[in-house]
Figure 1 (tube, rainbow, N blue to C red):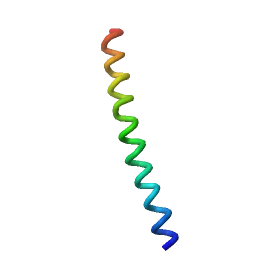
Figure 2: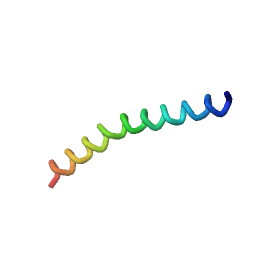
Figure 3: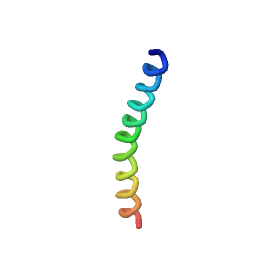
Length: 36
C-alpha cells in the first residue's frame, strides 16, 4: 500500500509539471519570434 501511495503522487507531479511547463515553453518561443 505504501509503494502504491508513493508512486501515485509522482505521476501526478509529472503531469502537473508538464501542464505548467508547456505554456512557459510556448511563451518563450513567442518571445523568441518577436525578438527575431
